[in-house]
Structures are given as structure tokens and as C-alpha cells.
Length: 151
Figure 1 (cartoon, rainbow, N blue to C red):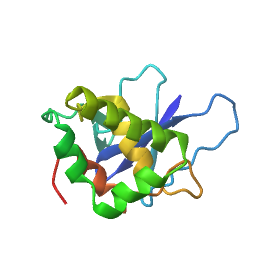
Figure 2: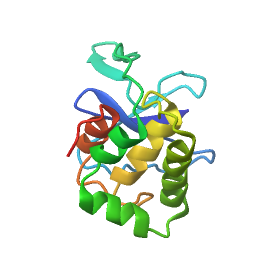
Figure 3: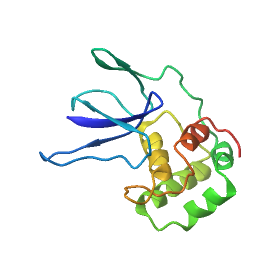
């Protein structure tokens, strides 16, 4: 089984425990744990509705447009950009390297990709208890960035 965490009807992160007795906790306040089969396609960004027979998941219907390098850059606040550039966290550094590569190649970033959604969720998750970078002020910032909303 894998566990997805749902906040306001949206899957905000996921985790798997491959050892019995291991408890998984979410660093995002208010997120509820929902167990799903390992082979379930449920992923970050999916919608979740709790029915009498259990949770019902659906893939998000909105496909967001590609983000140009400048659109993605401007979706972060100045403080967030400074924190990302200064971070020594390998996952944050990889995110910044991906951004720099998109600038160099003048290629857009696809905000619908699982890797992009997970990277942004990591930036939003608090450092403690972790894992997370604690750079974004809230999980709501993830969707604002994915939509390319300038700050």
C-alpha cells in the first residue's frame, strides 16, 4: 500500500512504507492520510472525494500550459528565489539546475509533469519534521507557481 495525503480535496503529496509497522506522517498541516494500492495511478494533484464506500479519486482535468523560463521565474517571490539559489539541499539545487537548463535551452517547463509537481511540493513542505525545504510559505503556493501567476 501507498499513502496519499489529501488537503481540501486534492492529493498534495504521497509516500510509501516498505516495512510493516512504519508510520508515515505528512508535514503539511491539515492533510489527511488515505491508503491506496501500490499499483494505483493516484498522484499529486489528483482530486479526492470521500464517499460512503471510501475515497474516490479523479485525475485533474485541467492541463496547465507550459511555462516559459521567465514566467516560471516570476511565479516565485524574490525571497523564494533567493532561498532557492542559496540552498545547499540537493533536491532544491536540482530544481534550480533544471530551471537553469530551461533558460540555457530556451525551453519551457511543463507544470503537469509529476517531477515538477513533486519538486514544488518539496519546496513547500517544512524542513521539520521533513522531508522538505520549507521555502514556499504554503502548499497553496505550489498551484500558483504551476499556473505561472507572477508575484
